[in-house]
Length: 441
Image 1 (cartoon, rainbow, N blue to C red):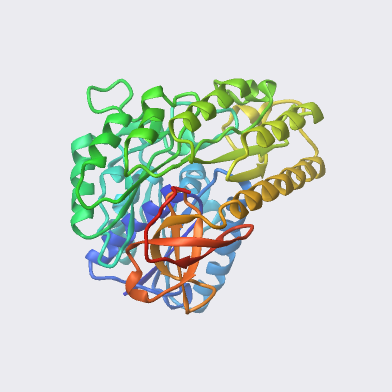
Image 2 (cartoon, rainbow, N blue to C red):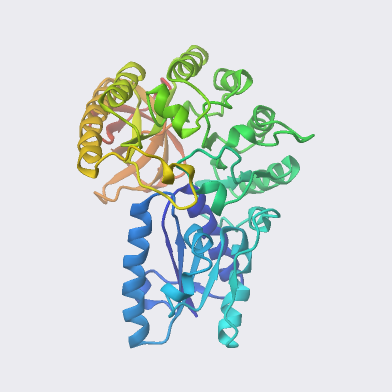
């Protein structure tokens, strides 16, 4: 039997899909290279933004047509399943099972139930979070791996549905995380990314390693070359975490630190718990600890109540900070959230116009930063062949920038010194060098 998993959303969802795929392969099922050849199709969903939800329902229309032509099992997992738990089957009566984010460990049970004509719809309360304890079989020939260290969020930002579909914060015990990473390292995986909705809150209020101490312990594990983590909340980032960037040689010089708005009025309405000045101070401290650190962020425009002055403050923050990259979105209302009932809705055409203006500014900043790297030699972890040319390899710098260069395939999985010869809008072009004179860029 062949299965296919379609994943929407962020790295946390990608990792959840890895976990489900591992369980299915361990049972003897095989991964199908494409949806149309699969006997079981699992759609792992995201509802953080309306666009991801729209893509999900578009795919479900296609699956409905496929199911009319041939016998397949269709299941829905993840955040939309949890959000729509009372209406999902009513909206999609052709699906065979559904699992919330904390129930994905039951994926095999769900498929077997379908075969016994006992469909499973499991939207367990998120408290126990058994799914977070799954350690997927990373398999051979992998270079990078995700490791869940916590799930859920206690912040309740007024626009965010995560606490309602992922539940409250739950942290894994540090000893379990360290054992998983040691096993990963023994399999030859070089880069580990620690995952959590708010990693800064890891073990908050518990008698276990706080997040900076966890990083220090991972830094000592033999075989691990690079450590990354997502995502951080500016309110919770501590001085001890900032200091890690200047002290831990394996911690990559990159942080994703969403700011969402440059207006204090909007930040207050969003319930973010910091000011634009406070955000700038965190950035200054990070750059003092690690001058070459790359900073990326998330930003929302068109939030209820945002006027032109608020938007201009966001633009000024972007110009001041000079982000390496930015994920920016027009606000989309989400069920259950406080902002759903806010007055002052921004007309869609105005929000999209502001978004286009902001994205143009950020494209110019990113391109200029990439051009400024020309002539520097950087350390690149080679991930595979380029999707644009069979003659090129592709990898990432420690600051998470994509580099393409010509080289033999036996470099895949290795750290290679590459001189940047061209900075493009979204990537870098390089040449492999013999001597390793690396600037962490």
